[in-house]
Length: 187
Image 1 (spheres, rainbow, N blue to C red):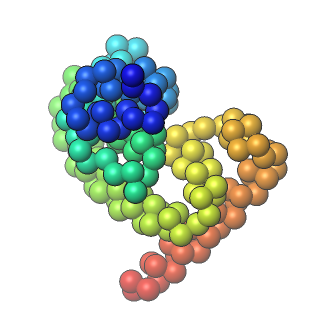
Image 2: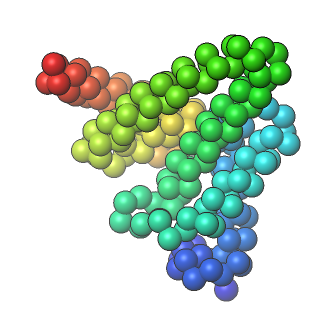
Image 3: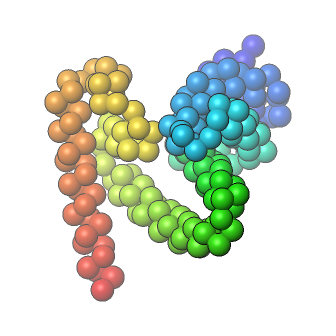
C-alpha cells in the first residue's frame, strides 16, 4: 500500500503505483500552477499537456529529489513552475512565428536574456530565503512563486491576514536590502 510515508522510496524504486499516487495527490496543485502561468497563452489542452510533461519529467528525474533540500511538494512545485514557463514561452514563440517571423527572432533573443536574468535573480532570492525563518520562507514562496492568495495562506498557517501581510513585508524588505547590498558589493 502506497501512502505519504513511503511513496518517495517506492517512486525511486520505479514503482508505477507510486507515480500514480503522486499524480492523484499532486495533480490539482500542478494543474493550478500551470494554469496560473500559462493562462491566456494556451488552451485547456495545452495546460493538460504541460501537466503530463511535468509528471513525465518527474518520473525520469526522480533520483534527483533529495529530502534534505526540500519537501517533495516544493520540489514538484518548482519543477511545475519552470516547465510551465518553458511551455508558455513555446506557445508565445509559436503564436509569434505564425504572425510574423521577424518578430519571433527578436522576441526569442530577449526571452533568453530575460530567462537568464530571471534564473540568476531567483537563485539569489532562494539563497537569501534559506537564511529566514521557515514560516517566512514558506509564505514568500507560496505568495510570489505560486501566486497563492493572502487569505488562503492565513487560513493554512492559522494567522491573521495582517500577520501574513507583515511577515511578507518584512521578508521583502530583508531581501531588498540584501540584494541592493550584493549589487553594491559587486561594483
